[in-house]
Length: 255
Image 1 (cartoon, rainbow, N blue to C red):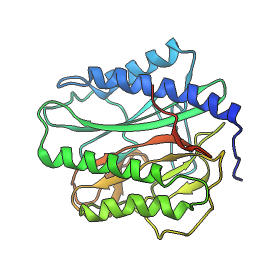
Image 2 (spheres, one colour; image 1 turned 45 degrees about the vertical axis):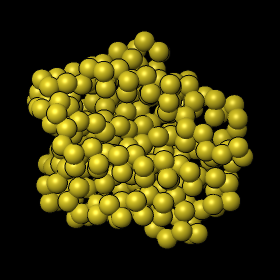
Image 3 (cartoon, rainbow, N blue to C red; image 1 turned 180 degrees about the horizontal axis):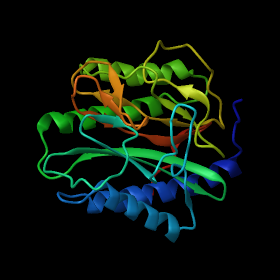
């Protein structure tokens, strides 16, 4: 069921999104060579406590997973696309890190992801991140009343394919509200002019994921969570929670 949010609801989602953005800024400031993703997870936990929020990820147990998720962040390094577990492996010079984080504040959810390089970046990694972020913004620009879900998907997919990147089938965005994953699904590729017609009050997470190697294939680790590129190439992930309004798309997961 698709639930459209009132202006008051959107303000609640905005406050949850602000907590998410503050946590991302705090993690980005500390991400460096030798830091672990578990260290970043602890930073995110501190931000949650400081703002009276709780994690949307910790102990989340969807039907596909054999166990609940063990962290408050998804920490995906290099060839991991999404859902990596935070761990004690120190980040190395040049690692491409994608952090996905969700917060619940007063019953409303915020959800966003950022990708960046620790230490000395490779040009191709910077380009991959830049194009993934460009796809996020293109998808957001298409999130206006009267358009359709397919217009968002097409905007994202066009940038990915023009860059020669792989796009993992079946992974994409979703509605956001009282639950982290609500209807509708928001694909990262598809024909324009198709799918659900967008109306003011719909709040969605748009989240392109691109593989540098161009292969769409992916594998799943034994933990049942960690999704990797099948060809071993690096991946980037970018996400914002966005409200569709009569005045245009409103990004909720910013400071």
